[in-house]
Length: 261
Image 1 (cartoon, rainbow, N blue to C red):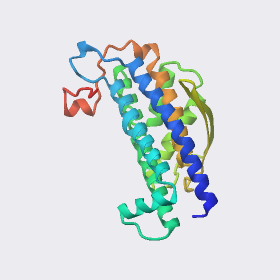
Image 2: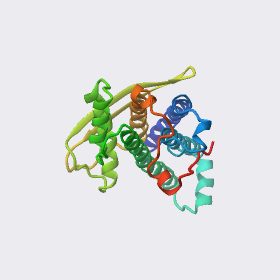
Image 3: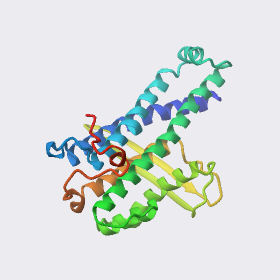
Image 4: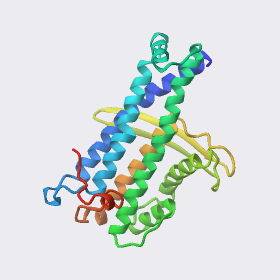
């Protein structure tokens, strides 16, 4: 790997690590404020709290720990130890490539898990609103926005489609089979006096490979969708639902599913 390219990748990872830390704290706060524990729920987990908890832990805190690990392994001495422990042979470029391959693998699996958590949450909320099941993530999201009368529907749907298109491409060998879409993210994450700007460009062309699945793209779209999730959960129609809201997967297999924290 060219040294300038390697340095650029590490600068991105250091920057994204800060963004993930801020985003993790935001999601944790959402969970505590929007879905507090209720003693009268007899230990059953509310689907809202479960979804935010699964976004916070597997999707964000684990990703943050991984990025910390990558940063700590990035100098040549640590890379040599990393290579020794993992049985990787070759020159410095080979070792760096192995390290960055780990990042790519975790990024793609993270976005799949994240999209599932969001879709499952919306399915559970839609059912509690007395509506018939809608198995299309994009159509369900559109129906939720309209039903709850949340403004800026077209703009929010661009974010939702971006997440859906990335997810779909990962199930299609990296190829986009949907309509063309271009979307830019420019936002600022803020928490406890810390802030960081997130900028990412997404471009999807029908039957073309998807190339917007890097660290900035993954963290950028997660941050945008978390904002939409908070709009849903803070809507009065959702806030007024008596808990616990059933999670159709966890409760189907374990009626006494409980919150581990």
